[in-house]
Image (cartoon, rainbow, N blue to C red):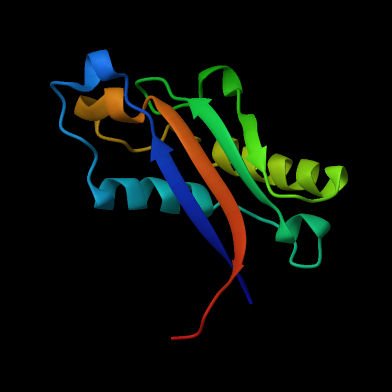
Length: 126
């Protein structure tokens, strides 16, 4: 069984974030869960073994600005597999934003610019 590991790095603007409290672990986890609900990669696909890190900016309403999601880095893999993994990550970010991500408005400076790592990993039984 395949699962998903999402690492979210929120890059606050230093000038703006000084007065706002940082996002809590729970808020970050909820954001990751919202995106991971739309993360779909066929376990048999070459993309299943690829990790990609994407970046995007969010509007105050929690929507991706200009629907622009960029790939920053990826694991070593065939170009076709990397592209498949990136497109799956991009779709996950864009599809799940339907009404905007539910993020704390008072902490916009902390979640405006996002880096998110998508990695398919083995899910361990509990």
